[in-house]
Image (cartoon, rainbow, N blue to C red):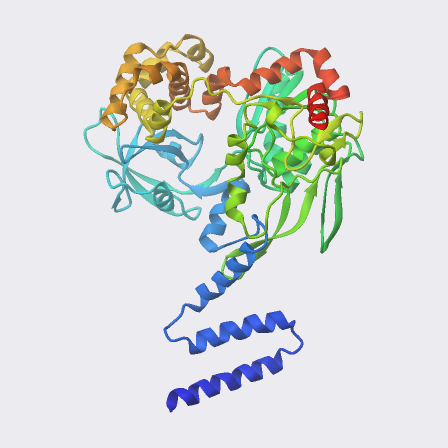
Length: 546
């Protein structure tokens, strides 16, 4: 009888709630009443906060692949790489056999100031042992990071020192850079690799270009391969440096969002700099906006493979508890009117995420002929009227197939097990001083260091100790690739610069090789910008005649 009275009281409250909500849309009234009934009448106890979060996630999942909800912790982790800095101790590290190995310290950062060195192994953080306990990287980062001005005590094992060394570090702001590499490829060609579009990316780009210009840069390769995007404003600011006054950079439009345009202000410093932009299937969002604007205005030749196709605009809605909903409110369009977003079915995120695999299986990464071109996807550039294509992502002006000639399952297994990183860490730990003494600069190392057969025997043995069985034929297939990666990882660890790895590994980068060839063949460069790629036209005509 008591339960009946409780239920009656609840339904009376629901009735009163409905009366109070008559001005609300009917669908919203329904949702609120459902949540109220569940939290009040459900047979077991419920977590009301989780109930609401699950409802929000369910609604968003029924919409598009990029509308999403994140809790407070997830929101912070997502935003941090784009903010340009975080607060911590200032080290770059790798895990080697469950031990944190310091690759390098941030110059002028908290760890460098107290004397932490590259090669040190962090055994304890405060009172917690982190070595040999298989702790996740995210858990280690949580212990090392913290509010600026707070302190953390670490105990370090250093080669040649029998006892642990204790350091008390005061956390400080640590910069997160968007530029992975900047250097001269030859006497006139600058190279810039940008990994993300963050709050300080434009500033970093301008600083890098200034340095390259002083070193003799008269033409540029902008590498946006594997760049997943970031802030729209960062892409707009970067586009502005290369385009003329009034030229449209990008526009957005949605059912409930009127058309909004961004135009160049004409103050750009590099409007005449010959440029090639490298993209691939993992270049997305802001990277596609930049590449699309450069292509649409015949400003740069785009080289590589069709980009990801992420052209939905998310507006963030932050809640008081620090969680956030990112709701798609519009679509991005390039200056020629191409919608960057690739097709998707509402609520079918699994198929959407599998689309890159479908491209692989259909041969798009290897053969231009496998790509479907038709008139409905045809657009023309704004300046010279050359043909370009939409339909999801940015199709490059010069297609470069993926090179799998050196790939093998043996290489895959070694990479998956982390043997490449483990070996390079171990080698540098034993030979850091000797390498630094023999090769004073990265250029000396690049020209003179050779990964020997003896080193590879040790590497193979390390793999076998971790259940990666040696296969002679597959090893020979991947030998050059493995040696180059090992050399690049050693360079990165010894010279403390992300560019070091890129300098070594870029020797085998086919996209970069084609980019430089296009830039250095000025007749071909200009023809591509004025006439486009005749191979695309032949493909369209061939399909029309089939």
